[in-house]
Image 1 (cartoon, rainbow, N blue to C red):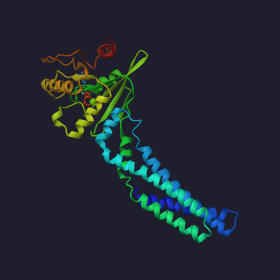
Image 2 (cartoon, helix red, strand yellow):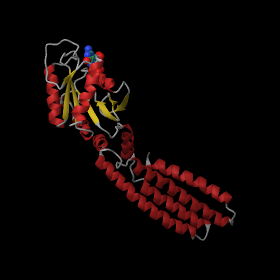
Image 3 (cartoon, rainbow, N blue to C red):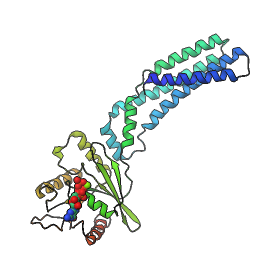
Image 4 (cartoon, rainbow, N blue to C red):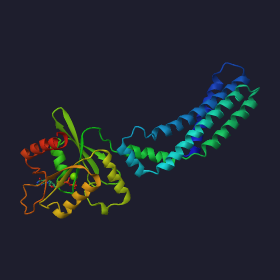
Length: 312
Ligand SMILES: Nc1nc2c(ncn2[C@@H]2O[C@H](COP(=O)(O)OP(=O)(O)OP(=O)(O)O)[C@@H](O)[C@H]2O)c(=O)[nH]1
Ligand SMILES: [Mg+2]
């Protein structure tokens, strides 16, 4: 919203309330005008004050997780936003002082001409304070806040690996095909989140297409930051590798990505080779080798994941 538009709304509401007050007050005509001006002042002030409070509240970072805070820092110009917020806070104080000052002046006006003059002066002073504000950065920020992924605070594992290796298939298998899709900034793809039951507990599995699926050198700075924000969620990573190479990437390239993720994230990492059912000459080092098409393998991998990350 532009400051001019806000002022326009506030004054229109104020004038409407002023008219009503004038009609409904059972007092002397002169006094009625003064009451109406008082009402205008209060409504104009109230409208602007609650809008400004809203701006501060909607861009409040205190309730964000470290992960989302870190994403927000890459999404917006946060130093500028902090400056804009500070300006709003200062302006709120000035506006409050103005309101108190002119409220007294109007209250003790001798006649309606005087109260009218004071009210106009108040509108003018209020306008010049509000016109110096900029809501654009804060509103951009609020919009970005709404697009952040909602990730639960619980035992969590990230799933990494080249495209087509079987990441989503495994997450779906492990979570009984109940998955939750969340947006992720800077990728056209979305986070796929599955909840894997485990006795009385649940483990959150986050499949990260477009994020942990290619070498660092292929990324721009912002993508890198967004990728690193994942560090704040968990250090647990399952790396999926496809030795059959039917995914379209060589085993060597996949092993290099694994090395890179180890260096960048220093994770607790479990390597799972998929597509065991497809015959392949190539061998790779992994903690477990499975086929996503085998029910027994899925049961096995479920137990092994719990053992690997959460027991001992
Ligand atoms: N034969 C066989 N096919 C598999 C196995 N795991 C996955 N696939 C197939 O491999 C293809 C890719 O699987 P996805 O689970 O979509 O792979 P992904 O890693 O999520 O791929 P992206 O989302 O593109 O990153 C699909 O056609 C699967 O059916 C497996 O163990 N055996
Ligand atoms: Mg996938």
